[in-house]
Image (tube, rainbow, N blue to C red):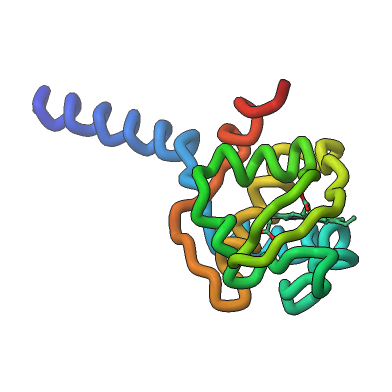
Length: 135
Ligand code: HEC
C-alpha cells in the first residue's frame, strides 16, 4: 500500500513537471519564421531566397549557412557589410541590423531560412541562443 502511494506521488510529480518542460518545436518555429521572413527579409533576399544578382546574396543554398550558429545570429542582430563571398560570388552591400526583432523572431526566421528552398538543418536555433548573443 505504502509503495503504491509513493509510486503515485512520483507519477504526480512527473506529470506536474512535464507541464513546465516544453520542448522547442522546430516545425512550429519554421512556420512562424515564414511570416518574419516575408515582412523583414524578403525585400532584399526575395521570395525564392535567391537574392538579387550582384547586390543581395542568396540565402537559398547559401554556403554561409554552414557557418557556426553564432555567426548566423550575429548576421541578423548586427547586420552585415563589407566584402562578403557567398557561394564563390563577392557581394559588397549593406544589410542593416535587424536587432529590433525579438529573440523568438530571430530564432524563427533563421530556422525558416535554414529549412527552405532546399536548405535543411534540423538542429533548431532557440531564442535562448539569440538572447546570449545580444550585447
Ligand atoms: C536591406 C536589404 C536586406 C534586408 C532587409 C536583409 N538583408 Fe540579409 N543581407 C543583405 C546584404 C546586402 C547582405 C550581404 C552584406 C555584405 O555584402 O557584406 C546580406 C547577408 C545576409 C546573410 C549572409 C549571406 C547569405 O546570403 O547567406 C544572411 C544569412 C542574411 N542576410 C539573412 C537575412 C535575414 C534572415 C533577414 C531578415 C531578418 C535579412 N537578411 C534582411 C541585405 C538584406
